[in-house]
Image (tube, rainbow, N blue to C red):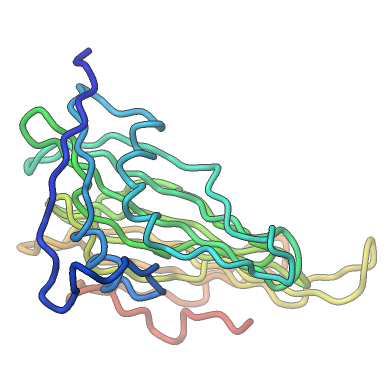
Length: 265
């Protein structure tokens, strides 16, 4: 195992930022986050492979720019990032790690959570932060951040990074966000409701009166680099699910979900 050698890469300030001005905390704008990151010292790791501690170091420059204000009246109710998934992958363009960080809010009230995605790339002997997307998907009530679910093939040269989210509260609502990953870059994404139910009564008297489910997969299409997204909608009120609709959606700079496959919540 090679010795850890932090290398500092310093990029120039944008012309609109004065060297005399103090660096400000970034707001919700990804453009501002990217601008601040480019003006900071970015860590590079010289190692054969990465672990969770390494990944934390590589994303520190990004999180140093992101404000973390309380979501409630209590100053302790800020976002925590204690859980994350680090997954190695490679394709024709190189070797990568996918790093999905769960941002958990306070576990009560109207607080929310979400997942951030980071892509690390192997360049020569070093690992660098190659791309990232904050608030990429997941989330739900009571601070639920969602979680990384899987990588799926959505094209000859593209993977789909699947983030799941949702919650159960006066019914259940669950969804996925699929973010395209191609040549180490995060590209288009789409969200899809996967399950929704609602009932009447409480406890043993509860009866499901509304239940919808979407199942999806990707199907190869002749002479096209991206696969078609196939969605099947089911009514699941009764014990057995009944398919009520289906659609095959071609890739056109992303996938546009028809309204008939969106659930009323």
